[in-house]
Image 1 (tube, one colour):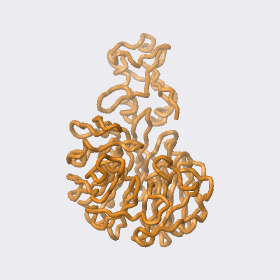
Image 2 (tube, helix red, strand yellow):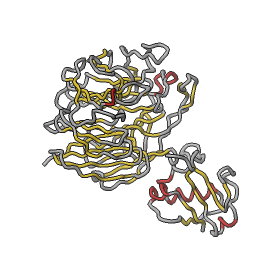
Image 3 (cartoon, helix red, strand yellow):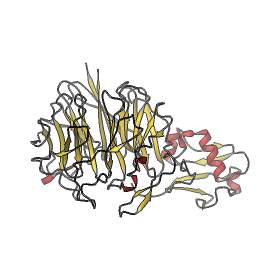
Image 4 (cartoon, chains in turn orange, blue):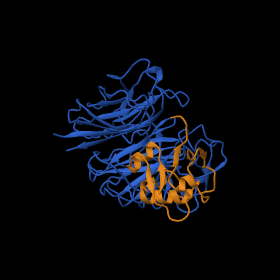
Length: 98
Length: 371
């Protein structure tokens, strides 16, 4: 089970409280986790990744295990501690004013 | 007893303001979609309990929310706005080509009859339509594709399609306006389009009387006389008597002919309201006095409406989608400011009272007149 932490706005949009626990088939990658997340919560489509290109939105980042994974290939394996559920995969809204 | 529901979009959420027909005592609900920019909300004329809202942030993109119970509960519907084909380029601020990129929905215009059909004006400028209550959106690509698109350019707020006017009796006729491209008309239900900007003159573009490139801020019509259009352009208040074929200036004695909103009295097609703003470099009212100006003669002769509005030290702006009129016997007029005030007049502008004073910056105001 993979744990995903969403920023407040996306928790509200998806109507979830706390973490989201996801069963991910195959390798635990950022793409696989986000695919599973959007399948469970279709309202998040387009909110994290661009609808057309699939690219991470510019003001969104992915953190886990004290690392910034935002620029890693989306098909790269996530850290083992994320894959086995000891650490969450964090979707973060970039710190910017407003 | 009849009543009104005022739908307010702000930089940090939406608010619903309700009152009975007297429009004296108000109930304020919100913020809905707290923390998100809500560029616009609008109810369906065919089913007033059906309301659509455009919710967005730079972080998490665009959402469309729909209510089926007059704004009490909301559900997200479709947010896939994909340009038809290869989007091509428009002009960037410096005149260089820039690819079309979807940013947000500025304005939603529900069909006059079908609650499931809605038009959406977006940035970068294009027109989309849903016929399934917002689940799916399809571009009416004839607008971008008619040929002048590469000459369109963004205004300061972005290159947005901000105004959609549906003809009250001819479902084939639609008017839209784009900053900074101009006004356009379709006579075949949105399939094909042509610019309707003859008579506009804009000093901020290389060819002041060009077919396109004008920063039209808003257009408005009265349903009883839909061939007469009123326009607040970047500078100049304009009027057309032939459905946009030609325009003439009717700024007359306004203290400034720069501004954003323009609207028409619900029962008097020659009574029009604008909010003069000092200039494009100073987005605040002249002399620090917030004044709505009203003409009762279709332009040229304007009178200031000041009773109840701040007449000193006021430096707010009123954005293009932030004025609306109700259709009660004594026409109500409403507008919101970038300072977070929403003012209401229950006597066609003669006097004003704030409904609320301290909302986030107001982006849009619509009003529903309820039975």
